[in-house]
Image (cartoon, rainbow, N blue to C red; front, side, top):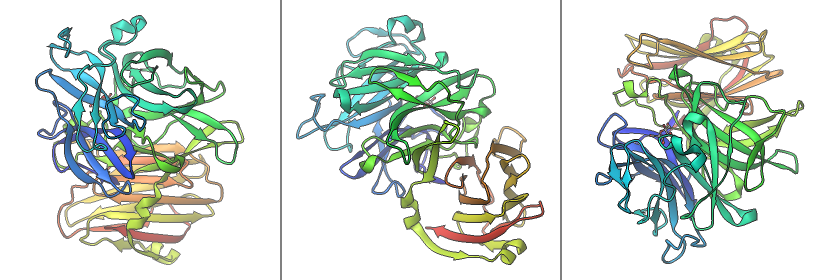
Length: 490
Ligand code: FRU
């Protein structure tokens, strides 16, 4: 399920996620006048609840004079006005990557070579609604001297307040080197390089993008850990891009991954990328949103089903008995406020196949409880008189693996591949609960308490009004659905 798409144009990564006076701000990579990523700007939407987003148009436009695209970045609420950019209280400050698509000049008059990526500021004195450029941009022109040759691969700054040292910390990537790079600042304008981070648990042959770093209390323990998440795009077959995270400690200068940790993937579908978390959310909630698409085919999709932004997820960190830390992800509870109707079905009804959503928009939340987990599966079928599209969710108890499969769904218009299958190792014990969120753009499947999540772009093109959505037991025998609730979001 996608919760936000701008009314038109191209969009990709979420940016500048910050809560200011209870208003939730969502900025995103945006080309309002094109269906391709060109002259990228920051688009803007706001919400009271992380679900119902109101479009606010372009916040930071492409700068046609300096030829500066506004690539991904973050925003902070500088409530103590450490930057002195505020008037009447603290400003909201965005720090983003200036991507110079052509030879140009910096505001101080010095030349910029095409392809340079520098970090720049914009600020708002009306709580995030309108924006000005900082006159002395960029605030970080180039990577530190030892990485000077990476001037074209230095991007995606995520800034946050580090309370123990009373300073701002920023994490960006040196994408081709597969490194995160950390800086600190007292005023958001002057940044000092502190350290860098790479990991043997990162996938090989894949660049790093959109890093994030956050502290999390371990569930049911009196300790906190730091989590670094990144998005990783393979240099060859981009379809395998995905998000990963590392768990360790951060002393205000350096992030160190715990020694015994293994590779950790955030989502097992192919369409959850560039995910980052909000700054300044009350009650220490850690909420993430991502782009629902994939650089492997996103630019081939020119129709209006061009992805969008994901359901907002609430992250929690648990420690397993084997000492591995794991992020547990649940849909942020605000989504359930939009449930219009619910009902449960008997096992017999499910076995016969349930038809719901005839001639309705597909906007469903389906919770399925499978008890006595056996060889089992379900199928969501969307069809009209000409066309049948199917999303199959199947659990193989012998190999303890869950599969999400798209059948007869053409995600990438430039290929003939209509069948895509993703899997994850998963041991649900005796009970498996699947929470499935589906609309015309995407499918999100949360397994049990959110140990495993799949996000899949659907692009359901069945646009006839005579369409149905059915849920039926999979082709495998032994389905053990005992209860099912169906809810419709407006
Ligand atoms: C990730 C990314 C970022 C970059 C942005 C440009 O999807 O490639 O690294 O800042 O998109 O739109």
